[in-house]
Image (cartoon, rainbow over all chains, first blue to last red):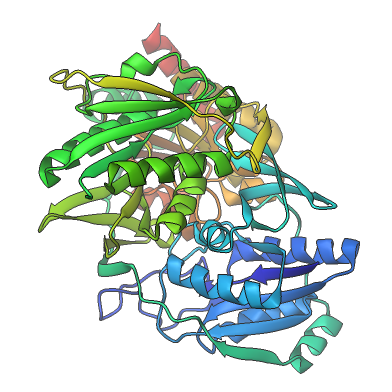
Length: 248
Length: 322
């Protein structure tokens, strides 16, 4: 068995988003990029699976040169090799999935982990698209994962509870917070990762299915009012909620 | 020929969910503007409230039935939607942006080679095509998108599109039995969470943060939620501290929500939290610190001690409701 873990390189969640001059993407000035938070759960689960079944973990990322930082972060945590599927132009989810699927096929990986969504475009579909392009099984939003021979039992977080899903390899699993506690990279891991080479390949060609017409800020909320500083303001608050907002 | 606009309805434990009616109303409206015919489908075993789906302006609803469909199976469901889309010549397909729709829609999109836009909050028909608006960066920005594929798939955020009964047109119901579905990937068990309502679906949310000082004080939030029939939410700080389960987390690494009313208790308003809830219709903040960022987006605020304010609010709501 060989495992692929797919990571994306995204703006830190503390970023204050400013729309760029092209009005189609964000202004990258001063933005810090990090490994997509949900992908850390994917890396951790890949490493746990590696420790149990003694297999290889390859890290894949689609994007520009800077994505290597994020690949290196996964290598420092303990992944074996890294491949950058290079494309300097941004891709929609389908384009990312296509590049990943092709390389997963090349690498003959039969188990794939990735975060359930990237915290930039928030589509939450790359895992499912990749699975379907490869004709692999897919379980998304996973919070429990067990592999036994070829059989997978995974817990999937849904509204109001958890679905226990049964499927089999080959499969793509998209990871949700709660699945595990991602490890910190050790100093030794960081040093080792610096020495590892990250292979670079051109991402599979793709013509985008999504046209971004315009990016804009959401309408600003009107500043509200503070109606009091203690419990005596409660009747007025309830009156406003009933008569003005009409929400209760 | 591509001439249909198709809505995928969601049922849970044999009942159509509220978001299904939102899908119906939306496709009825868009079918008028695009001059296409609206049809819907639902996959399930028995569905007890099927007749409630009549009268939303959708001509036909097909129920694909099998005893195994009491529980979700992505492998079986994707084939049904794919086949139906092919057969009817669907040009647009709409799913709810729920854990069900988010799982299923991309599988269908990949099979059809369809472009896909998730979690849309607004649709406009321009030059006989749909322009969809969707939040990105957890709502810190919005994008308007257009899909360039032959078949186009969108998912809609729950609670945004109001279901409107028209009663002008009777809906035809059809039932199709599915034999030997592909159950390679299937749900074998559903474990219900303790809380009654999920934040992603609730009309009112009462959320608690670090200001509650400990998990033992969350009963204040629970009581208020109970009085309002609201779901319970939590800030990342409260979840990371282990006070509340992750499924309650609202914000950029939790859930993005748009309820009618969001009551933030003891939440200062980190940027990640604000991104996840600022599209709520009305926001109430209860926080000791009058300079907390949450007040900058709250419609109504009480800058006071939540240990006094929340019980008083629970009592007042109880009083007016009795």
